[in-house]
Length: 184
Image (cartoon, rainbow, N blue to C red; front, side):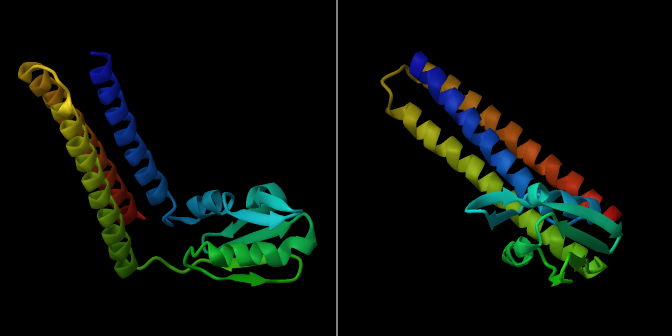
């Protein structure tokens, strides 16, 4: 029985990890200037022999809906900040002004919103596939155990229920994000 509980626990943890990874990836997609500044702050900058987040080495300010300004506290690392933003591949190019970095955000058009939704839909479908693979792997593991068929079916049904819950959770998250993108 301990082994079955361990399988169920591991299954739930793996499915939750997939959901958290999906939400993190989707939150990184630009939906507005406020979200841009929040994930800009998570970019890692190499300086002083180690890595720091952008927010730890600079002041990030939203000038208006289309412009962000980054003022590093130490001007010697400004080129490192510029390289890190370029390498993050966020869909915009920084402009080095000597004492600050300026970012002009492109306008999100109807076409680019549709592209964002397609990208999110693709990530959502991939997450669903991963959840189903976890179900399959755990069901195969249960079948290899020397337990009664009734117990095996009960545990498999529990895993199926868990799988359905996570698929629904992923789909609900997608629908919420789709509405958010179309509303902007």
